[in-house]
Length: 115
Image 1 (cartoon, rainbow, N blue to C red):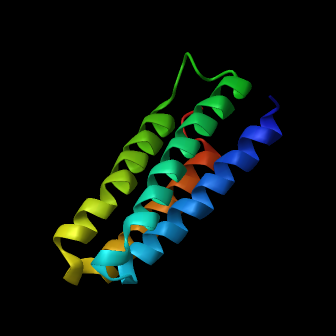
Image 2 (cartoon, rainbow, N blue to C red):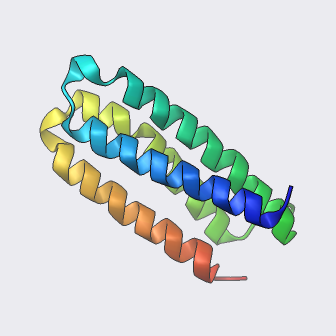
């Protein structure tokens, strides 16, 4: 598969992930299941496509610090629904923090500091 395919797939996962996080931030507890499912699928898509991109860039064996930072961000965003379920009163700050992490991940992907 091509670099462009992985990039589009990664972006589809990104949009789906943030759409699901937005929905989980505002939807009543009994209606969250479809958005939790979307969040999980989007997370897997982003992970697979992200490593596909690394392979296409030739960076899969020698991952820089920016890649590890993106993996940590991915893990935090993956855990966000748990925070939203346990602390629903923190929905807005949690969502805003998720957006900030998304912006940081975009910065890391575009500029690849340390490479």
